[in-house]
Image (cartoon, rainbow, N blue to C red; front, side, top):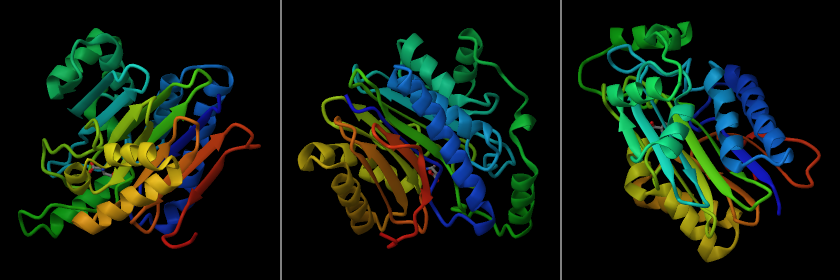
Length: 303
Ligand code: ASP
């Protein structure tokens, strides 16, 4: 079976001074996930480990370093899905968990439920051994400054759609099992309690061994309306090509809602696909037969 992993580190117009860190973070994440796959580990573990690397890297809008909401607080969302069983686990609006992807994994494996939010999700973290942190530990100076600047120019009521660098991973293991995960701090200056596509099954992520797996990043309000991850997976099953599926899903997304975002995906055979309508999509991948990880920040129209 062809093992493969692809990760994303967000879309949007990633500022040039952050390009090197995005590439390095995506590369390290894909290499971490690949090492697990290469050693015969499961896809779900590879995807979780890859995402943890990016949650721990402050350049991404996930875990520590995430965007602040309108109250100046980090609120995190994450989700995972197992393509073999279709089991899924997701959490939203957690403020005291530095690695929400691990909490989502615990929901997947250890809960009778699929989705937990806020305080209840944090209580589940404590019950299942996921460390709780001080919310202030998740805030970095770069984001604090952006928030202060936005607050100074606040004329009331606008929603921020600043650059966000959500992270995600799609993996295929030697047993032929697909898995996917996504983690984010959401959009900049979001309304407290706002949840985007990232932790929503079918919108931000989807995995089915029989059809394929995909993870999305971009403007969550648009991604939700087009159920973009499941749309991409359906296209893999229809077209038999991960590249074509990613392109068709993003073309539909643009056409239908003028969508801004990106998708990464894998076919059940381990073909890699990615496409985006934003200026950049930070991503990295490796599959069987490749000598190492390839990382890129593809410019729109560059291929
Ligand atoms: N999709 C994320 C959200 O809307 C943000 C992003 O991927 O850039 O929360």
